[in-house]
Length: 211
Length: 211
Image 1 (cartoon, each protein chain N blue to C red):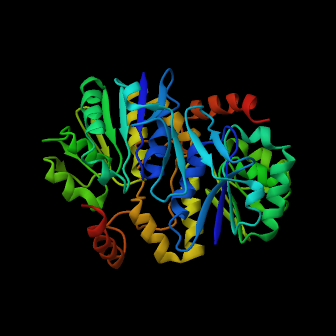
Image 2: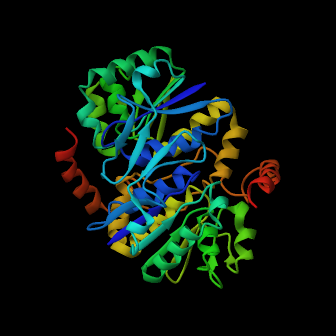
């Protein structure tokens, strides 16, 4: 089994590394970071660089596709090299998945039409423009499509997917090994829970970011 | 303010990227990935490479030190270049922090003697050998030392630290932006919650890993 995590300029690091860390321990699987061109790929903050070991062209038929999000997603929405790869990879994949605004890339490739899906809470409206049925759930499975909400939700998505790929016991073992027993010091992780002024501030800023 | 995340061969990716993602949005702060030598650093699984932008020597006095863990920690326990750097950086730091077995490196540098601290649940006994008072809490703050339990707990640690550095409101904003409202699909993230056979299997294996 081959798992491909797709990188692009200005991706969000945790979007990619969260599900990576859950899935990489799948017995007998190869996990590979891919990008349009192999080599260093910088994140949204400009202070973290991951290496894409192989090009998209070199990994044409992964069993599992993981597409992270991040501010750099906007610039990829009309990148036909990436979108064509997503369509072709999806045609052969067992699972096609995303984290955060990665789902907008799946949607732009036409893969989420008529499907229930999620994204970063600030991007749910954009998802609907591409014909997906946007939901506020943290991890949404519709057929072979598994989409996650913002950034950190990729960990929950990765663990959910791992359970489907390797069974509940293996997923529980990885949860134990990575000590994923979260205890956030605040309770502001969703627009329903965060103080209203923070939600409003972020919505106002996002008008300039998400287009 | 300068935040240094320390990389070493065979670190665990999420240990580093979890707190990185929480701390990188601190206004006016520079976050830098450092290693003994600048350049690519491979993770424990061998399929992910992060770039260290600067050498330890180039970043002698960060305000915040973050030391991740991972299987590669063992090989660093007598790396005097790293341990000397940790001691010197700690002498000037505002916060000295770790995730997972990163606390064993702080302990080996002599920084946790007599202090309450934590580590990956499989490594708590080792922590005590270096004179720390090991506890099973997820995030432990003792003076300027903040240590986190295994792998994913670095996210909770990063968010806790962010609250201390920038205030509760900023930390809540980052929690909202990264949609950190965790909902693991299983409840096996600590040895108290996981099925006993998984805990036992992991303890048995760890005898060969943690030395």
